[in-house]
Image 1: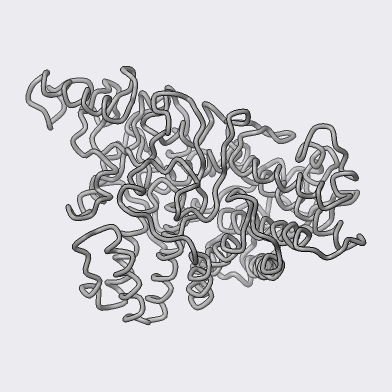
Image 2: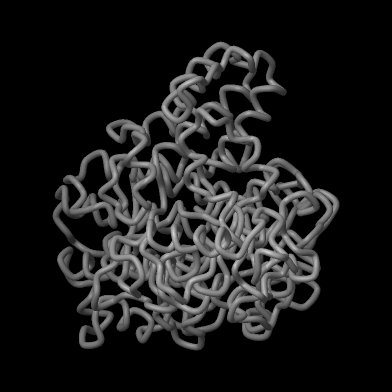
Length: 523
């Protein structure tokens, strides 16, 4: 790992530009400042030493992973943002900013967590709910970061040989000479993050209540544990942890679900980032990439769409069908499907007045500007509180819906059919007034329905790339509405078990700087 990852400069920039690393670790109050810096870093595009601000926080990687995984479909090249991501050109290039920032930002979380954990272990601090809260969040962040790394830079646990497949370096030191480590096996990395998340839970059980949803709560820690277990195929642990994670976070009703997903105050949100005005990312924010109302060139020229094949599977009785507009007119002359700019090229309209009246209705209803284009199957799931502006909105990392779906999938995989059906009915009828889980009577039928539910419910929330890996499914945009001329390599990719392009390249900078990793260790 590059030496700055554990340097004092690295810690200096976490809580404030003025506090030293020694002072930052001198008291629980100052350690909380480090954690507050990490809370901001999850969503922010703040530039870390040696990196680029353009690709760093979850604001970028949530929509990027869904673009790579075929969930979020770009309707045109737009202003070029993420085009190379969805074409599968960035994560397959070891010199690209995408792999560099993903790797080093996660190791920034690990280095900062190490500093807190080691300082408390070596120090003489009185045990208190505050200290337990700090230790719990530090261990949870370390587990979260390793999970992000090992599921991205190594072969999937359930499709590989975890005892021998190379994972990522496990590092604990925060003192000179700041050396990194060789790549541990995937199994060893899982052992470490499972230990960390269990430690986090034990501390958070004896901690005070979280200050807000930006902090990792006990529920969020159980959610991280559920994600780890799901990616490993540890179905019992995944089901039990997901059930605990969603306690106290009831499912959204129709009006809440369709309100725009722009605040972590929604009752389903377990963990999210409260983006404050002074620290917003503006044209690198999550809503810049995904919201149809954000007043940026990425959105005005490139409405994001759902797979038409997937959308057409949503029943009319399911209110989630209102989150996309299948008949929105294709007003962009640069639309990649070649049908944009006129009623004459858009098969859904027969006259110019009808075409532009439909556009005007969408613009007026959702508060877009006159410069915004529309496109069939465009999303209106993510809407700004103040549409037509560049104002910041919250970023959601974890919802109880995800935990329901993890629990249902895990029950189905354990062949607990009746239990899976019962929980699926509870979830399904909260979205679809005519939902009937009894029609999914076998494990295979349940799993197919769970896949459908995840793809609709969690659309745009960053799961599709890694879901393909878990399910060992190819990426195939043939019937989605994606344009092959735009997507190129990202239009079709063989299943992950047969295709190592799903494994991200290790940054060349890491290979150059880490004495324990050579070019022969590259993915």
